[in-house]
Image 1 (cartoon, rainbow over the protein chains, first blue to last red):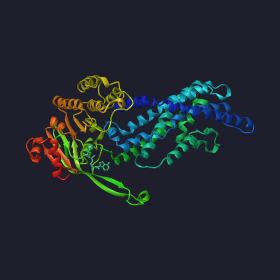
Image 2 (tube, helix red, strand yellow; image 1 turned 60 degrees about the horizontal axis):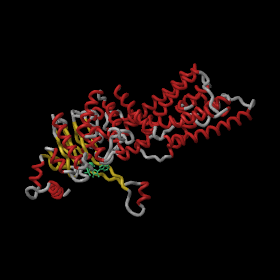
Image 3 (tube, chains in turn yellow, orange; image 1 turned 90 degrees about the vertical axis):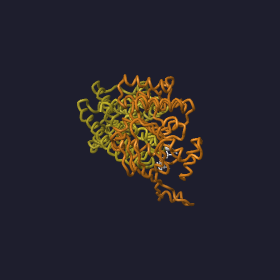
Amino acid sequence: MKRTLRACLSLFRIRAAESLQYRLAALSGAVVSIVWTLIEVTVYIVFYTYAEGRANFSLTLGQVIAYSWVKELLYALLVFNIDDEIRGKIISGDVGVELCRPLDLYWHWFAKSSAGRVGTLTFRSGAVLLAGILIPGQYGMTLPASLPGFLLFLLSVGCAFLLCSAFGALVSAVRLGITWGDGPTYMLILLGHVLSGGYLPLQLWPDFIQTALLYQPFAGMIDIPARLYVGSAAPAEAVPFLLVQIGWSAVFVAVGRLVMSRRLKNVIVQGG
Amino acid sequence: MPQIELSGIRKAFKVYERPAGRWGLLKGAFKREVRSVTALDGVSFSVGEGELVGLIGPNGAGKSTTVKVMSGILTPDAGSCVINGRVPWKARVAHVSEIGVVFGQRSQLWWDVPVSDSFSLLRDIYGIPRERYESRLGGLCGALEVDSLLKTPARQLSLGQRMRCELVAALLHSPKLLFLDEPTIGLDAVSKLALRAFLKDENARSGVTALLTTHDMDDIEALCSRVMVIGRGKLLYDGGLPGLRERYAAYEGQDTDEVIARMYEEEAL
Ligand SMILES: Nc1ncnc2c1ncn2[C@@H]1O[C@H](COP(=O)(O)OP(=O)(O)OP(=O)(O)O)[C@@H](O)[C@H]1O
Ligand SMILES: [Mg+2]
């Protein structure tokens, strides 16, 4: 157990170092992010100005703007097509090398794929954060609502990282044996973006689905950390939120392991 | 009890084929023809501790498939295999922690990071204590002359340099058992000699058992006291090289490669 953990940390380190080399790709993603956020913020400003007094939003304009920036910071987490490397390994037969390691293959790939996000996360989010701070006035990013809120936000981001990795590993495991095209993956990504609050903060959705929205697995990927940052969820409310994140992570890990062990039985190590 | 015991191992691969003919491409989208290719057709042998065994045979004979089965990464259709008291594909994790594997055509090194980083990753994966690791790494690097390559990313190594590093990687955890699938592929004379000398020495010193496949008869001559010949998924010969020559050589002192070629011909492989 301890050895597995050490090995996975070591795998994580080496893969993260590798992924840090793809700076350019991450930075170009950041430019898109920043432009997109500015457009979004403009739309919100217009919307809130004209709706003044006529509607009762559950988030203030300032909160929505901060939300948009935070969302863009966390965006790099929502990459679920990480199975490319793994699929490549299976097609080429390189999976044989990994099977020769005394490591549970699920955790082996979990460590690798989660580390693969570190590079993009660092550069892309770093650039977005910088832009958010430098952009003046109403358009820029605001400070977190409170210090406890901010600390809980950081904790929640950690949980979101775990959740997204576990979900990504599940998607990979499901995809292992079967060749579906990219279609279902794109649909899944779209669904993930919508339900995680990537397009519209979940709290702006109709009241009657709020509870359902909060407890579905994608909420933990962006919306929950963002709520803690902008203060639309008080620090005192944080515990059940974090539990939602951790609970879904555990579910995804359990199902992912099950699916993967099933699929591995039929994998043929190609080549020779 | 022998360290490796295989009996009646069979493996057939399913091959999906597109129907032939003008509409084959279209038909293939709906219906694929399945054909079964027999790679191993009842292979049995046993290897004792400390043996150096060479596995030869023509292309497509089933050598790599045998190695995969013994490494625990391929489950055969029938037959039994017990290595170090375990069934490789059933107790994969425990099994692979005691063996070292090199697939000549694949790399186990990380492509973009210095070789030494790949090695320290292996240290953590196999849980090798730090001092043991340091001394082992020092010994291996000295013997295989890879000291100067440690800071180089694997992608910048030549084939021979990489292969020597692969060997270091496979031996870091001091396995009792080594499977080498074409370890001398693409090596120059100097590297080949170094590799052979190293294997011989390692075998003599720590009694490691090694089973290697190769197409280079000099490897066999230099290293292996025992040769196994596989053809069409069956074990055709198992014994010393002199015995093989005796059976197939046309005349005294015929070149080993010619003897082997004659044998393949005679057995209609
Ligand atoms: N994944 C696979 N799918 C279908 N057939 C396969 C597969 N792997 C191997 N085979 C077939 O099994 C047989 C044995 O292959 P194997 O790789 O063991 O040969 P080999 O003895 O290693 O040959 P070589 O000397 O060329 O490396 C071959 O006929 C090959 O076509
Ligand atoms: Mg082969």
